[in-house]
Length: 407
Image (cartoon, rainbow, N blue to C red; front, side):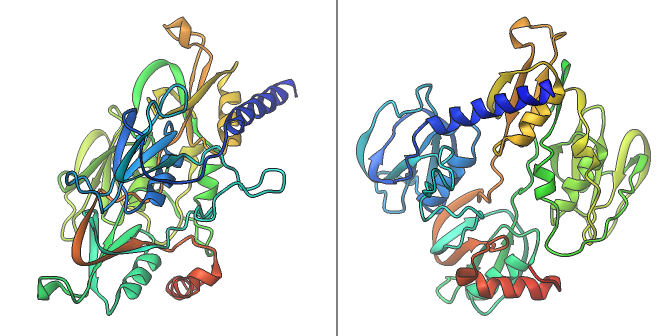
């Protein structure tokens, strides 16, 4: 009981810390916050850039370079920024840019008043479509559709699609007109790096993967059949960190290009592979291989386990001092921003880091690898997950038909 009280007190202090900062939701047109960059990504507009800043573990404010920028070719650049004070070091007037603040400190209601701005949809919906804008790269499938709405419906009905680009009648090459490109980015909260390190333990928020479960219709549970001491050589298209073979299978299942995988336990590496024609197989010790699950839900036991001697380095929201990993996991689960954590034992070699519970998160919203102006291209995002029937009735009907169930 005492331990639970301590966790609650710790959470309350964290929430007070978060919401003691003011909520600045206004966008500042032709204003630059120079310097203090922590990450540069591509965004189609300032609202997408602001949402990305709000999801980034350390971003406090941002500057977005608009398409009307004339000084150089850095259109659609989104600069995520951080300072120790939480405020920009400088504020300059500059044409062609828009700046603003993270919405981390804005909650949906405070004292009965909504603090989130109208453009910030709490369901994560990105409904804008951008004309003469290309979301370059990340393609995994293409088809021809009559218009961009049908392309967006195709993206919305495909669980792997996060965004799309459609080539209209103004596109320069006639052979490719009306082509719809479906594109992928990771939507699961996975640690970008893993490190074997004595004296620490890491794990996941127990809330995140409950929310991410496929609850849109009754989904059959399936077995995570994995072959031990087996390698599926060649055909790699991506290598990513994974805590276990089951985690690797989960990641393979989340990627529409993955047809099979191999997991290397010693290096905690997951090799995603793509081949529709052949699947070579050979015996090899300490390797684990298998196929993805597309039509049933894999068990997520790997997300409930704590991983001794494994560090999830970086991407810290903050840290607090706690007495044990149980409290750390409970705090991460209770914190709406935390996706995974690392706890440092009292046996850790560096005394200053002992008893620290690091709460961590990554961006999971769709972020195109590149955004560029291109005549005859219309781009946008999947409407899967949008819950406003007035704005997404048509897309929702398409998803219901495709899935054979009611959303």
